[in-house]
Image (cartoon, rainbow, N blue to C red; front, side, top):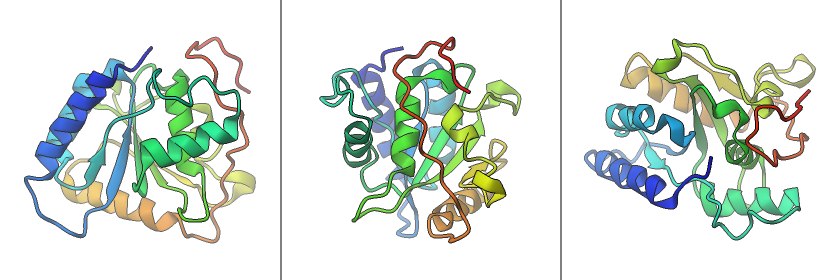
Length: 202
């Protein structure tokens, strides 16, 4: 599904309104990764919890200049700089079809990407309420949710937050996980090139 830029902008405007209603310099900047089919659930999440972090909600769009590239490293680098920006945590909100969306995969890959000036993002993955606390994980998340070689997971997989305090605790844990020496990240999977759920992913 193509993610219309104006829909992402609507979400960002809402996020800005909610976020700026509170002054709190301790809040983390978080990229919110989602599939547009879940717009209303994500909107509810932002309305309820958008005061607890500084949200970035504009994801990858077909019109972004790097989308046509066949160079995975170039794509991931551009997504890291242009889309994730100064965020340190990625909040992955899981709906029915999130697991097979290529731009979601790109945003997750960019969240794991480290540069000389930026560490990787911590990632919190959680099913949306409509999913009954269960969801299929994107393959790249599945590669990391238990940690490579049995090491500490580089993704926090959690239930939808019961309150603001529990969300802040999750975000703080994810932020700290970026520097944990025992955490192993597997970002070797090639980028998805289609949204099709029939694409083979071992």
